[in-house]
Length: 184
Image 1 (cartoon, rainbow, N blue to C red):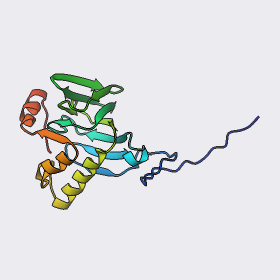
Image 2: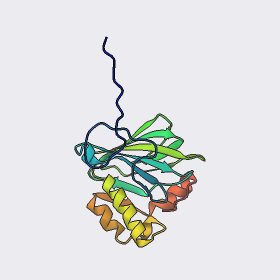
Image 3: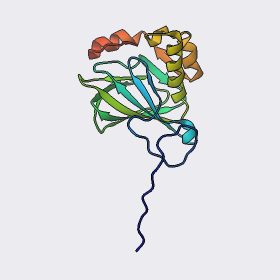
């Protein structure tokens, strides 16, 4: 009878390779965008451009972003812990741990932590590419010593390069309707 040999898989390497590896809980680049964190787990180069995967920790009762639209990619949010609220077009949903929320391209949407405890979601972005928006946004915040996303020079231009559009006027309404804050 043949025995299986246990192999030590490499931990995360973000060099564009597609070989087997383990992504441990503290692996991956992390950026803090104030209203949401972004931990990069799978970059598009690692999936042949098919998808990227990020983890988003969201502080309690926090709106992640104003209503926004993606022209190029779909997003799938899998709730790991806590409660995630989302507005998808005209519909509002609350997702619990174990739920998956689909946010299709071309639809105005937003999401938030709907609870008083931390919320963590895995965000699958398909096709890949939009993960670079998060990365550039984090780098520009750091370079500008910005304490909020709104302080990033030419935020609209950065977003437009990724086919991403915002409705900043939605922030006050969303916060009032759902008892949220927006530090962004």
